[in-house]
Image 1: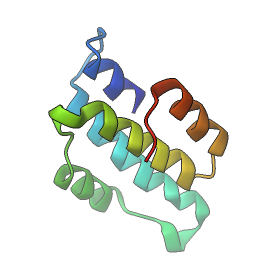
Image 2: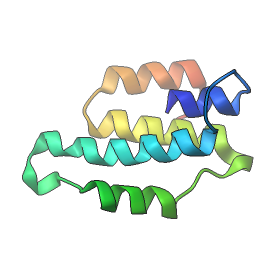
Image 3: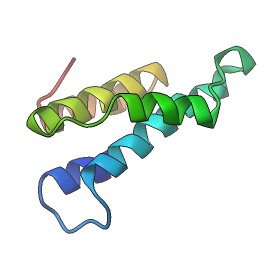
Image 4: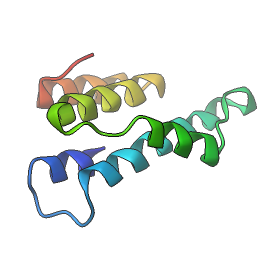
Length: 92
């Protein structure tokens, strides 16, 4: 997600913000597998979801940081979620 934010902010990053966002959303969904087989989402399903919910340029920073918050919260990394909110100012 941070690569998507860096690309959106105009930093020199290889690849587009949309591609980094899509990859991060897909990876976030797939990372739920660490909680067991009941929460496992296949790569194909995660990619399909990420493709169906692309980055919207007009609200990119808000969208990126809300997804970052959702992923870190779901993975129970509350300190990171809070730290990103403090850094970015975005909270869902």
